[in-house]
Image (cartoon, rainbow, N blue to C red; front, side):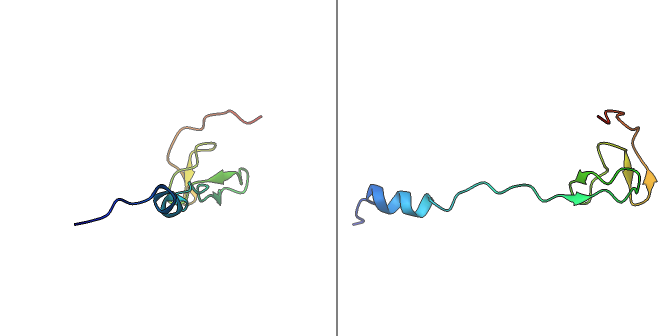
Length: 61
């Protein structure tokens, strides 16, 4: 027979379920340089690994 898990034991175990900040790298385009998720095309300038693969959004403010 198993015993009921107490509220404090369950909550202590769940205390480590924190969300982490997303990993970001700088864009390899020298003209852009904005934070971009790794292994993804830059959403700002549309470049990936030195060439343009997406149309730029043009939202440079």
